[in-house]
Image (tube, rainbow, N blue to C red; front, side, top):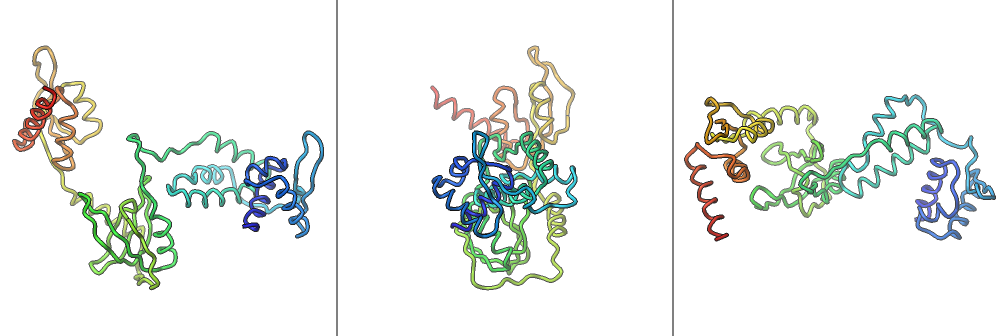
Length: 317
């Protein structure tokens, strides 16, 4: 623990140039007396650290004592700062990523540190969706360890409709698509892809996994996503939609107009063929649009929406 704290102290000194004992104590969550002892330990180990007295004083390293990072230009620095630690999702991984960036920041020349700080002040990554939900990545550290060390992984997987199944796999790689993480693994039934947020009770097994010599993660992901797009089921429905609502729908869904616009009671309506993922989604959207949409086809969807509207009306009588 002390070694970790001394390293953190050293990184803070390198990153800030000069920092007060009180600020070090706050950041490291220790007493000022502990800070003084740590400074004595650093000095005894050969680190050129010294104290400056006065109102502008504090602890400081010799300016010549630091590791330089050669060859990092402005474009590379900007790209690095854009990969903010919170993007990884899991708190523990984000903290590890932050420590790595802190180490790099500490090794930068003063001019580049100022530039990096300026970039970070102007960039924020929000990993929470508009619904307020974010991916549950509690299993990600264990999955990452299994991938990194080529160890078999056992876990419980939540399939659609809350069905749970037990799996033991050979983990081959991790893929991040947006803020969603996927595990690509080899199974007795061939390669499979698992959404990490649906993995529960992940356990690293004391057995090595079998990794195909010719496996290419990027190529596999490209091929599998193309295949998914080709085979993904689509549910088509014909809706008569109020013109303003239709304009919004056409921005978010794949639509085609199947009849000329028509005027009904002074309002313009458009008849659209809309492609949804499935019947559940089509029903949800149609009900959500309320009086601004009417399901024309298929009959099964029309009957289902009509029945749901009648049931809702009965509850509020």
